[in-house]
Length: 168
Image 1: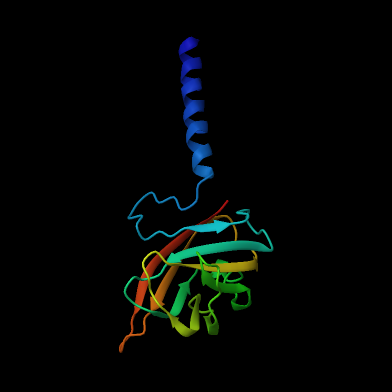
Image 2: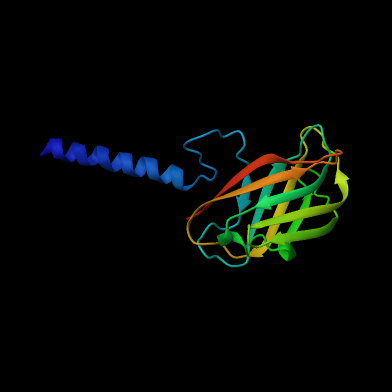
């Protein structure tokens, strides 16, 4: 009888002890490198929560100016990346960068943000992309990638990283 009770106690501790901390964390990476996983902050992570706020943080490249930002998202997150709900600012100073245009490709699931003037890359400088008023998708983990386009003669998109957005 005591053997069954101790097995039940160990099982309960393992189940409760492992599930509670994991449920409270976001950006959990089980397999693969974590160095390109970026931070974000979400007001509520409930599935289909309306009027939600999400702040996505991305470091600027140290040695190049950024003329354009590209965000590639899954189709389920289309309402979050609606151009009318997005703003881009400096995370430290909270100064908003003026945007010339936002180009949406709904077929691919991407939004390209073209700035009025290039943003100079400095060490330790981060962008804060804010989405206001979007609706969360169904529960799951969604990969959102971010690339930047520099100002060099033949610019190519450079990967900044990815956000692993958890909706539960």
